[in-house]
Length: 248
Image (cartoon, rainbow, N blue to C red):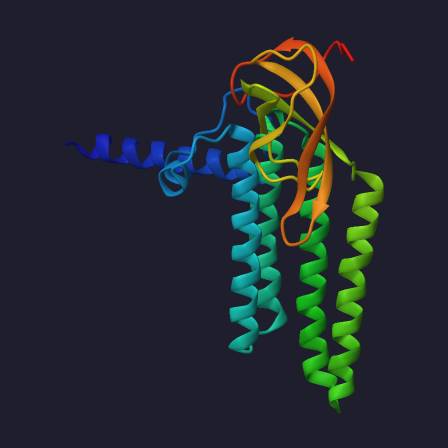
C-alpha cells in the first residue's frame, strides 16, 4: 500500500468521524428505521421500534444514575457530574430527535426524559452542596425532603399534562368472550408493552385497533381492563396503533 493510499484512508476516517460527531451534536430526524442489533440479542423478544427506543431511553437513564452514584461515592467534583451530564444529554437528544418518527407518541417521552434527567442532575448537585456545607444531619433530612417533593411535583405535573386513563391496542386473537390485545409501551397511560386479555365487544376482528380503559395496579403500573372503542383500521400484529374511524 502506497503512502498516498494510507493518507487517503486516514483522511476518509477523519472525515467520517467528524460527520458522525456533527450528526451526534446536531441530529436531524431519520427516515430509516433504527437498528437494534445488540439490544435485540440482549432482550430476545419480539418488540417494535417504539418499544426498543423506550427501552434504550430507560437503560440510558439508569446508566446515568448509576454512574453519578459512583462519582458521588468516590467523591468526584461537580465538574465530573457536569461532564457526564453533557454527554448523557447529547445522547438523549440524539436518540429522541433522530428517531422521532418511530415513537408511537413522541412528545410525552421527550418531556418526561428531559425533565426527569434535569431533576436528577439537580439532585446530584444538591447532594454535593449539602455534603460540603452540612453541619448536622438535619441538612440531609431537608435535602431528601426537597428531592422527594421535586419528584412528586414532577409526577403530578406530568400526569396533569400528558396522563390519561386509556391506551390503544391491536387485536391479535379472539377466543369466545375474550380477546388478546397487544399494547405498545405507553408512558402517558403508564402501561407496559405486552399482551393483555380483556372481554370481547361487538365488531371485533383480528387486526382491528381498539381503545382500552386502564386501571392503576399497585407495583404494576396501569393495566388495560376494558375495550371502549373499536376502529375500522386494520393493522398488522404489533404495528402502529394510531386510530382512525371509530365504530363505537
